[in-house]
Length: 292
Length: 160
Image: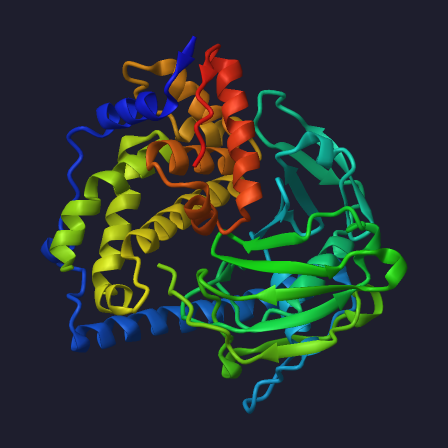
């Protein structure tokens, strides 16, 4: 029997949502009307919230770095002044954010989706909606083992075979190192609040993961808030490092960190294992639409 | 277009999309309400740009809210069944389809809802999901195959 999914789904949605009537925002007392003065006030509120979150995030970074594994980690707060916007500094800050708790990142390889999520300080979970991809899953040279498979179409969960999650962090770091605008929030999730646009390019030695047959488009999403399209310009390991280009266009934005709140920690040199950033950011290539 | 006109025009489609994504009336209402409030606060900006697409903006915001909620709950609990059960609601007159929708992977569900409920073509779906057109087609194909398997029916593969 052939059914019309559009019609059946539409009928079901109509039935399920009948009687739902949203309040007009103008009738809600805590919603600012969209005039200039109130927009400024709303913006100030949002900025205050973001600053508060950033302060909390910086504190969380410091705490987590001190606590993590008792490793000899030196933490210092960067003095106020011009932000160090070098790729290494961005990568350093990105790694610090990734060492905090409760973040997720999602990668899409063509039709497949792989998402990584922090669970414990030394354990990450990997999910793939393509079991065929998942069984071969290797991120940053770390093989991941299937720990749960529902077998009913839901994503399969994979858990690192290694206790130390640093390799995947380094892999994520490779991508994040070229991101020019982002911020951490209190729960360690990389967040998007203000419009920011730009583009950049980085080189990674991820030849073992991205073969010549790999799809030409890789998308990275951070906690569902921001997607970076990464075009693989050269995916042949025989030809040397793969060049990944990050495009920022008509997608939700990522916030530039407040220079006064940047916390810097001493970490392994990201370039040693994950490639060298060959080109920094370039001027924005178009207006970004603010994400709500 | 004024916000009032936009609110009336997009009210039902937004609520329907949110419900199809979470199959929970209350959660769908909360997400749609939050989305409309954000649109209201930013109306001047999102409606005045030369290429302004406030409806697409709202859908993106709603999808982001839903994804964030999924992820927050997923990382907060190691028991997946608890997460899934949070999204249960009265299955209504078509419990088979509700159950099948719930069993779809998140991205497959997004593709199916955007394409088959909102009647968006795959290019528009790709833009909203921020993936390639081929990726949307793959998600649609897998999603429909999964629905077909569960529903025991053949789905019309009408694809824009």
